[in-house]
Image 1: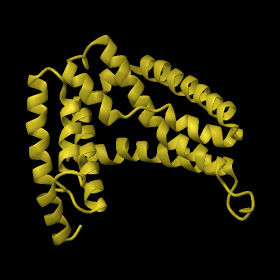
Image 2: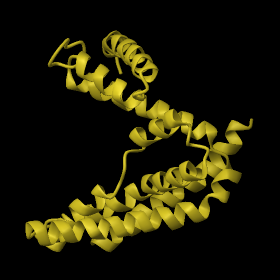
Image 3: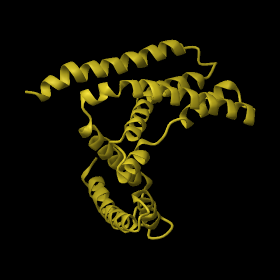
Image 4: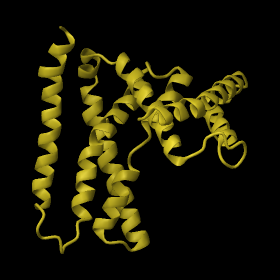
Length: 214
């Protein structure tokens, strides 16, 4: 990001953060929750009313930065012992939610809209995922993130985040053009994806972690 782009990001992000803070405080005082305050603040600074946020590229940069900060804060609260304790919820409730909801939505789309099974899966599987950036603030605002319900909800969200890359691979395989015979087969792409994920995990554990301890 060059100097002008960084200046534009700060100049347009500052009023957005100011409006968000103001309306979150107002709506929480009214007992309506922070989520509605964020929505109202975004509507006010958007192009339909005040138009304080200009180009679409700047909007995306601000949104991605906010989501990155949110996930970073979530990561600060995680610990290996807590993740190990939640393993049954992550691979139990999380796996069941993604698979069952994905299949159910795919069947509804396939039979309801008369889509092919590949198109139905390509639509139904992503629709089974929730928004971590939307659900976590709601749990934190309600004070339920540390409760058994909140931990199970967080475990489900965590599995959904983990499953994004495999789902993208499945959708990419389903959407390949049959005439594209020169590319690698779908099963090989899936193996490449799994190998890349395993490589990143091993690199983070055995390379980056020792470097951070220096």
